[in-house]
Image 1 (cartoon, helix red, strand yellow):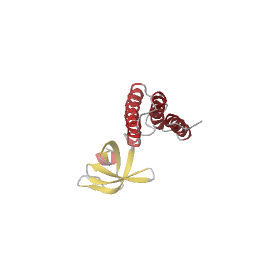
Image 2 (cartoon, rainbow, N blue to C red):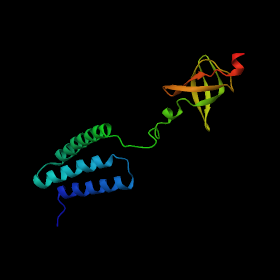
Image 3 (cartoon, rainbow, N blue to C red):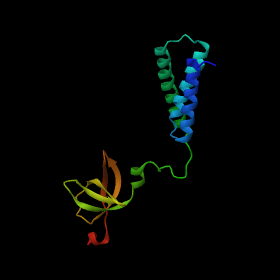
Length: 151
């Protein structure tokens, strides 16, 4: 049995699908779909030139990714921890310690075992502040009112 271009594309589709199973990332499956479409098309129309094959693969890849992305937006996967991969969202409301005084609106805070740039009202090193948001790559913090500060 000779290896026609259509069979090569179908084998590529199987390899991409297998790679998706081994290293799941929900992306290679779309490329596998595109390769399969090109492979079936080539079995029906074997005279398609190489540039046409790659053009078809590119077009079907884009279509598959856009349709897949839309499907995932419309049908989100239910999870017990929706913020699992959104580290900043997990930090909202957390109380953190200022490690480098927030002076002129910028400083550093300790979050777990790492330090983040912080923006907000001036606060001395050692002060406790609450994370209220994120701006660019910096945490937006607000000073907490504590009984010692009210006196």
